[in-house]
Length: 271
Ligand SMILES: [Zn+2]
Image (tube, rainbow, N blue to C red):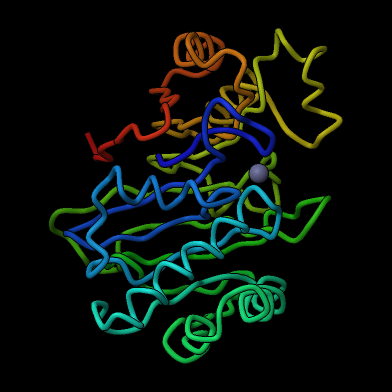
């Protein structure tokens, strides 16, 4: 988890994460800025194994860091130290926005790689791609604010040995029942928890189309989830967040709860 906070956090980074499988890397969102480059440095990211990213939606806390990722990749391409293409998988709204924005903001020597070796793969609701050797199904989370896609990652069909877990990322807004068939029974569910339910008067999660750790626990239990990962939280309680959010989610949920800190590594397994 490179970042675990909501849009306005300053004590941690905005929610984004890197997934790794068999030495290949996939980034999901990039937070709100240049700090994404620090995260790459801290994790000693091998750029030669990093060729794909997913962008869920165009809010500042998810997309502005992507400009820095693109700048980084363009710099490596210019230096001749990066092989192959870098592909950003995203919905049409982002494809309409991001290439033009980057071409305007970046230097010509960097911008020339956009849509040449830095590619935009537009995905629609229900489309699948193979990423990290897994089948990834993109879905519209039916956001009331702005078009946003979540995704389901599962083993490619007919793979009987070494089955990887099924993971669903709901993005940064509450679950919509229209996506039930893609979410139910997942091994891992990544779900936003803006704050604790007991702090709802202070943070007003429902007015902001967010949910709480208590709501996420209820949802995970109802959907038969095995492991619940909470993120996109407020940053006033980072010292007690793991313990307090876990406790609240577990009031209604019998599975495992993970409330990672920034730069915490989660090992996903079927056990
Ligand atoms: Zn967000």
